[in-house]
Length: 349
Image (cartoon, rainbow, N blue to C red):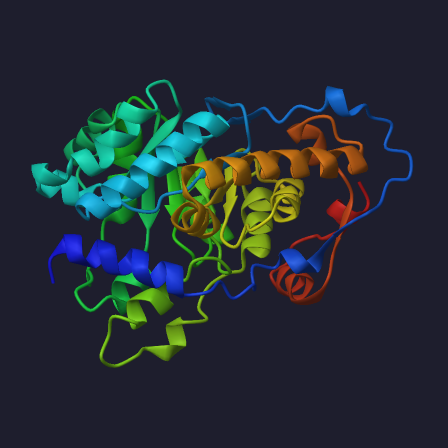
């Protein structure tokens, strides 16, 4: 199957495959503050992500591109919404455009529409340094995502079967490209072991991409004649993954993504230690069903609701939200306890 057709199938299956709701955010409960002592006009959503300064912790995470006119229109709509909502945006994997110039426009449209926005390029860990630089230059990117998707590749009928040398290539890219590098999982979560190895090669920003959101094992299984069922529930839930990374390598800037559906989910991700939150599936569905205006309204609602939540917790800033007390229970508590992490640092702060 050609790459463009596969991209279209990914979009179709992403829209038809419902999130499983197992990201772990339901296990997180904020400690109510009866005296929040904050004025709503004093609440600001600005955040920093390594060297990057963002006006909002929300951003449109990598979705698509490289699938001809349909993916061009999707990326154009997402870019318009990002521009109006003043949020960052990542494009999908640019491999197709690196191999076929005819697909470049499906990515360059994002910069054409949103000339002054924060945009992240996207490549896989298999690419060379030269291709990583080409991906950044293609869209004049402000940052580069390198996605890790071994499980997706294993389930994908035509997927890669050789994952050797990825860490060395990431190190070479980090040392060479002139923009911040974000290493991103694609729905299976990031462990403390992975975080430590990435830190050792100079990575400063990670996107945990935890289990609970768009499930690429399920998507690829829809494209198979024989289903590999055991990978459908594979991965580290997002809430647990955020804690694994932030408690193991506090110096890393963390993006929480994977099953972030609401402003409350986002607030919980940030309170666990994330500096920003990526969303994909809910934004794609909104764009397809309600158009750009509907997506802009959705982003505005996310900002409004997050502001209300911060007001209730007495947090004027994203940094303040990262310090509010919360209680971790259920499966997430069990996971973290078994893995040796201290959950009381959240409940007693």
